[in-house]
Amino acid sequence: MIKKEMIAMLLAGGQGSRLGVLTANVAKPAVAFGGKYRIIDFPLSNCINSGIDTVGVLTQYQPLRLNAHIGIGIPWDLDRNNGGVTVLPPYERSDNSEWYTGTANAIYQNLRYIENYNPEYVLILSGDHIYKMDYEVMLDFHKANRADVTLATMPVPLSEASRFGIVIADEEKRIQEFEEKPENPRSNLASMGIYIFSWKVLRNALIALKDQQNCDFGKHIIPYCFEHQNRLFAYEYNGYWKDVGTLGSYWEANMELIDLVPEFNLYEEYWKIYTKCDTIEPQYVAPGAHVERSIIGEASEIYGAVINSVIGPNVRIGKGAIIRDSIIMKDTRIGDFATVDKSIIAENCKIGNGAVLGEGEEAPNKLNASIYSFGLVTIGEDSVIPDNVHIGKNTAISGVTTKQDYPDGVLASGEAMIKAGDGE
Image (cartoon, rainbow, N blue to C red; front, top):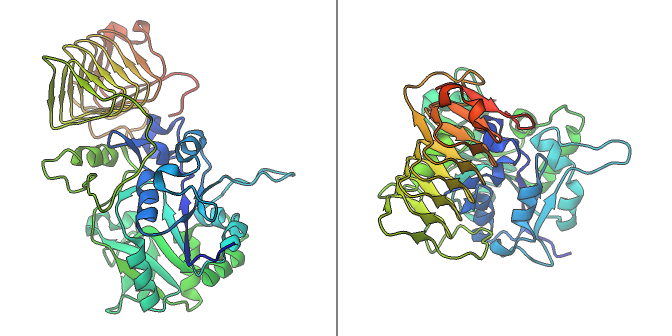
């Protein structure tokens, strides 16, 4: 086995419960993004663009689609005999199946995988952020400071700082204090959940904390390294970075792609985002159809109007239909004369003829107001919406619904309809 200077461990086991019905049957990193991509494509592409050719992807929750998407890593040029991409599910032990109980526990369970390569450095990544970052530049910073641990950080508005791990660093960027999600943050430099560890330091910390319940990097490993006089440094990143962990931030990040000058550019030659592409025919825009400021996926057929929206591959928009400010994922069918406003519609859904989504005034969602908000309509995959029904804002639907499910043909704002067998 050839020794590697740095390998990446990509944590992709998250359920993403704040995405509601979008992640009922699929892991958050496998959720579609920007028409043709999945969220995990971004950190994987960053790895190959940064010259990292060995990536362990740690999966757990609903891993099937993620596994099928990654395959042997061909789209990212990670199909290699030595290194490449390896999917690492939790080990099935003979006496009991050991689930990963925290981000650091997941890495601990895969110490043997890392030891195979005996790297000098280990890069820890999360599978659910949208950004472009050259990890080689971060590694150069780590080496220049003779750091034991380097945290990628970025300035955030002080009002949002309590959502993050917050670091206080001196002029040399050496970390003086680290607080995980402090109530009263004293700095706005937030940890991005991207870490470079010198391998020996990481290994020692993981072994020392192996019996810690729900062992986590932010809560346990970083404080442990800090307490043991390791050299911790903050690498400051100032590019585009979005945690798409809520429906609102997920919707916003997609909508930002279609700004006239997008802050996040998917089309740069020198920093490509790679993905698994099915070989499918080109898109078709029918005579009389209208498309404005939108991303339209391959093999989609547009017979109606699409305005300010992100449309995935193999989607059909019926004649007379109007789609505004919405995300529609692959293989979905929108009926004739349907109206879809500010909605997120997952893969393989059927929206009936004349259905109206996203009308009326907002009301807090009765199932979970903290998830289903932002004025959005959220529809889980494989759902069916019958003809001519009217659906309000801050609503959630999952499953095959029929006319009988809609009293007077309406699902009012703030209501949810989750059919048996579907997650919340």
